[in-house]
Length: 219
Image 1 (cartoon, one colour):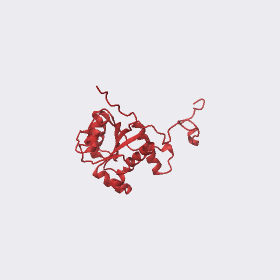
Image 2 (tube, one colour):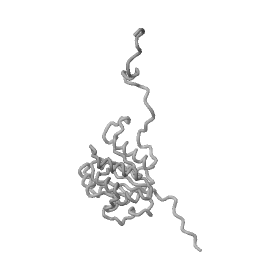
Image 3 (cartoon, one colour):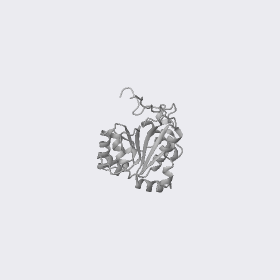
Image 4 (tube, helix red, strand yellow):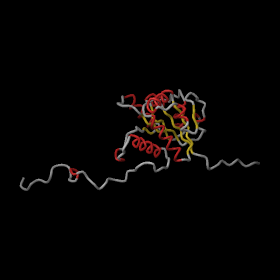
């Protein structure tokens, strides 16, 4: 009897990256770029039609340029793709940016394209799903959908900048957010400035405790 063929332990870990129709396609692009430079990860990219339009509007990037950033590119209409099945092992998925339409599809299990189907698979397999929701202000439907996906196990991650990093450009702010997303996805890296506690220096008016001073005697 033949022994089963051993699988290689050197297989790259897989991550799914989706770019959908909201401004902020730079986040998906930067995550792909970081994963490529970090190494050891196989990226699977899905771009919705509106996502491709926004990438062109935001960055001047055509769909072909986006495809070159990933190891594997999937057509958004190909619901028979590898990432549409739970038997295809991945470490998780990030939708960056995540439009309110995509958020609603995930929240209600409406798998009408490969983005929402892959997200549904990630959730049912209890893998990590990170949604960089991009909208402001938020209406009640948006908020309820965020609650729903959180209850289902997703992580809602609005791309809020961290000013403690003292970023000198929009690009540095984007890098920090993309790096934090990789943290949440379990990708080891040291590509960002990390919080190490408050600095010793205080603003002149912060040196004294807030509130009224000690009362004078006799009053």
